[in-house]
Length: 188
View 1 (cartoon, rainbow, N blue to C red):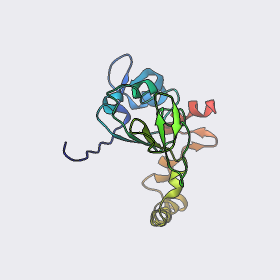
View 2 (cartoon, helix red, strand yellow):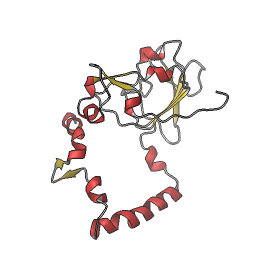
View 3 (cartoon, rainbow, N blue to C red):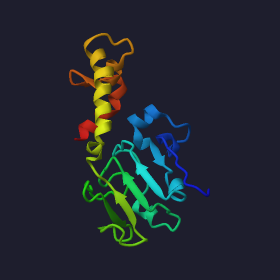
């Protein structure tokens, strides 16, 4: 391509069942250890990664530090929105901050260094409170949506089932759509 290309990937785009067969989203959420990652196909062509998917520690990592040492590894900038330290992205070694949002990661030494130290390093952003930094207009819009779209169904009629679909637990028990979170909570 002669211009930047953006792709949005879902879990099925970079995970496969170890035993073969089709990706099953429900099974992946319940038993992520039954899957392996082939995300390195993307690290061989992409230069920037914006990672924002929930990661279960039982799930495979996107790629490893060893993968980053491969000459075919092309990522130069990683923005880990989820900020899972020592999680699915090996360069997320610590949270960065709003005033100091980026750092370099040297995969050879596994060190965090000042940003833009070397072209050989990967520049990482892992601000753990990034959602708190939304601009005022977005906050105002969210407030308006909350009033218009949530409060009315919460206190009056909810024919679209908005509150039911958005309820994670009832009386301390996860509802069916959120049962996959149970194992995560047990580990805490």
